Image 1: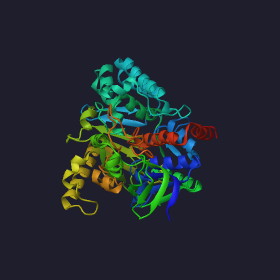
Image 2: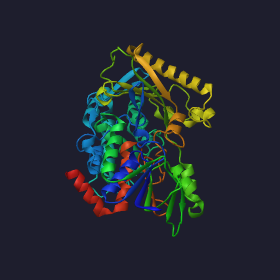
Image 3: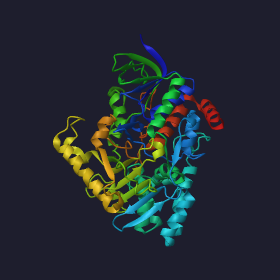
Image 4: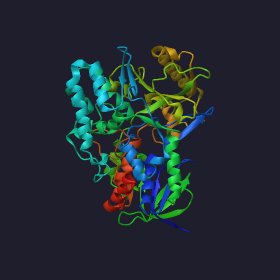
Length: 500
């Protein structure tokens, strides 16, 4: 018997979870489909030797009162289900440039950052002020950054047509300052000469304001959504996905065929999966070749080779005040995020506070990587790779640990490696086409898939739609969700959530 729903949501990463809960809170009957065996996508944790490690969520901005993520969670009615752990305001992050040996502390709060950076670069005060003033201006002129405004897709600003690289070059000739201001490109995996200054600003402002993780890490999101979805009556189906769109009339799909053999009828279907997977689902006879060409032109953002480690049993943390440390061979992020680059990679060392792990401090070391780096084994799958692949993983792991110990020598003998993962690991584990950490590159002048698709009752959302990361993925779902439920219903949910 054919089941009927108001909406189907495909993909249960943070965007799909947001979309499903938003629609359910709008009094719609929702089916959430997930191809994997569990919900959560890259925000779900895994454990090794009883130690919890995060896959795609390590820290976030915007969790302070009035912050963008704080307000999103209020709107969804789950803010009280997660508990943030804020990193130190005075030393939220550190950048160590190996070519000069200089270390720069990166506090939280734009005023603190400006004061600290002016101490480091006393002759660059004007450039520092102008950079942060422009970041704030971009976000203030972007309605989707304010949920009490009429939410729309990001408007076209002058800053959408100029690259981050161009802005920094105009501001200063100081290479160290340019490297420091572009260091957060590692948060979205796109080179400064490719990303617009506007999208860089929209991505980074929340991290400038505060940096936090959650008690239970990414699992806190998963558990909060799982409980709320159950209360709202959302049907969640794992190991289930759409194989075919049927009965397409007037560019609308009448039925959705599942891998289980079932047929589903729904008014709308929201796809929060990778654009390449969206294109693969759409029937070519109903969609223009230009659409498929556009999707084919999208490039992958950076992925990561990740080392999962902890402090050796019985040893004390030699750097207890350092939560996020970035080791950069140079300040040239265009080079460090180039798929053709084969030198020492940038390393981002993230220590999860003990409050977020139940007393066992986990350490994640992320090195930018691309599918091209593992091209020899890209036709293999997890558990069926040759010995040479594992030898290469071991070599990369040793090289990363040796660099950490060279620049942070107190880790010698105290860093215990638990596991590692390549871009191929992420590709297979997350059912991702290319294993990238942030979906497609957010390139200047690029028209991403967001909102209504050529099949008119299909919509696209997700971190490849508006902005990457947790906040960007959730924003995309609210932008698309507002279109689906209408302005009045959306405004009622905003008022209910933010005023409760």
